[in-house]
Length: 429
Ligand code: PMP
Image (cartoon, rainbow, N blue to C red; front, side):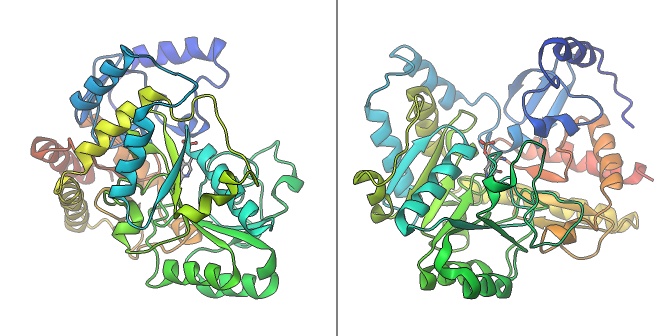
């Protein structure tokens, strides 16, 4: 367990629980141990809790803070926009500027639409696919997260049943609302082929995280994503990459650039605005014909909000800088190497998988998992002990083994992390 005391956070959590149902603002934050921490401020790769502990931050707000905490250029852009207005409910030039920046950075896309959260953008993509194809069924994969809506919060982290069974993730999800959601095991092109053979003419879309970041950062098997895109094309379905995590994180062009692939639609969120609430759906121009000609509809009071677009524009300028991503990947790879070598020298079996900028540590296994079921073999308890030791050393990590690396993780941060890893692995027994 941790030997740090968090009296301020504990007091605030108690107080929050009186008026804030569950005490936290996102279900994902309830699992965080030892107690949900309350933060006061952040700067670069560090943030400080209300008890004034400084932590090196490898959580980056669960992904968005690709430029770290409190980035000057983002701050300046937002501050300047604040003087001009925060929402117009009408058009403004930043919409065009950011759309152009995205089109220039991401290969194979011509147009975008904006919304506010990843969950919303996924719904917009699914609706576009349904309107385009005139079909209702969608395929998603076990262990993948596409937001909290009923039609996609299906078989997210099931603890039993079969990998191709559509299972509600929580109470309050009527089965009829995911009756058109087909669930399949990921990384298994034969099961996708077979689904297309059986109900291919009813499938509107196949949605996938290109790197399975929400379940252990499993990497796609050689040819799987390409096969998925081709099967969709052959059967007249829409291929959708959910790049809410991988977008502007694996590379400036996200998974499209990193894996050199071109699905029909891609969904972005998180890093796109470096911590402000913006999401987007992107694709070739003709994918959006159904919106242009009125066959379907997409709206939102805050869509294209100028504050978030000002943040996005500044962030995308920084990310467009040629070596931003190679530096981040190099930092991440140094962490991988350190974790693996320290574990080896202390006789701790573990593997690291994913990418330099987002990866997962799996304790107690010798092979990188390839799908959600395989992640269940990892020793989550051992990882929690490691995470608590890292917290003692001033490094803050997510509960599920995932690490996010950003542009402000510099050499000093690396040195701190490397020492903490050494110490923590030596002390977790
Ligand atoms: N898709 C993926 C791949 C995600 O990781 C998330 C959020 N973790 C979402 C969609 C939903 O995004 P949001 O939380 O912004 O609604």
